[in-house]
Structure formats: structure tokens, C-alpha cells
Image 1 (cartoon, rainbow, N blue to C red):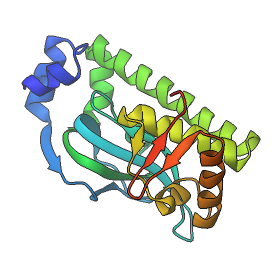
Image 2: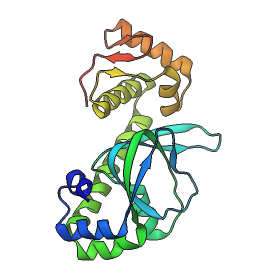
Image 3: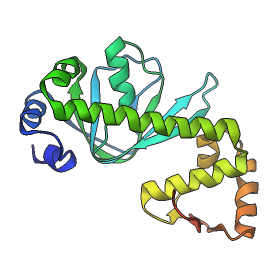
Length: 210
């Protein structure tokens, strides 16, 4: 499975062989929901290509963006839920056509003991996601909406490796759990300050990436 070694170069040969023998390759289209709140999780998701949006959903259907899963990464939430047989507390949506490796969760414990490279990968995945969640919490707790919007745009710019973000005002409002009117007003203010340029179909970000 060449895509495993290319996307996860730190995996040892034995681990790659176990993944080849026990996992399923899945092609998913943009817009598909991979994981829903309250759902029991059966597989750990390893991303070969594409992009997955991870977010929380409140009781009223409101969304709050947390982070993206990108090539070479895995879903830490599914790993955590597996260890305690708990239901998912997040939503996972495909935002770019993706190729995924679906690894049965029951193999996680044995691989942690059998493969040092898997152990290190899981620990690094936990650490990275924990740090990202802390950043999200800091933004919610300590920053005003204009600062949160600026940080959000920087994250998007870094994730897409582009200054041109094809995001609607409503999409941004949904991710930040606020209204479209608030986002439109703040973006207009940012444009006046020379931080963005608003075009008909995209936002040009003139900020330094995070």
C-alpha cells in the first residue's frame, strides 16, 4: 500500500504491513458526513488525501469549527472514543474529496504495544489536537469576535496554502457560531484597515499566516 508509506513515512514496515492486511481504503466526496454526534465509532480515520472538517454541533444545530484533518493526520477523537467505548462528541464532514484509510479500532491497543511508530504517532496526534483545542478555547474565552475572525482567517489561509479563501460570510459565521451580519460588518472593517480585500466569490487575506 504505497499511499500508506507516502502519507505516513514514519510508520515502520511491520505497521504498514498490518495496515495493509486489516484496513479498508475509502473514497469520499466533498459534503459527506463521516461522523455524527452520538454515533459509536468503529474505525480510526487516517487521511491520505483531501480535507476533513471537525466541528461541534449544539442542540439547535449550530456549528463551531475546531480544526481540519489533512493528509498524514488521524482523527484523535475516534482514538479517544475507542479506548472508552464512548459515543462521538463531534461532527466530521468532508470538505475536499478525500481518500481515507479506515483502521478497525480494536487493533489500536495491540498496535500501541507492537509498533513503536504507531505509539509515537498516536501520542503526537493527541498532543497536536490538544494544543489546537486549547487555542480554540483561548479564542472563545479571551478574545473579542474581531480577533477571533482574524485568527480564523489566518488558520484557513495556512490550511489551504492560499491568500484567496472561497468562503461565504455565512460559512464563516457558522464556523464561529455567530451571525452573518456580524461577520459581514467585521470583514468590511478589516477591509478598511487593509487586512483583507472582499471580492465577489472569495476573500483575499492580507495578513501573515499563523
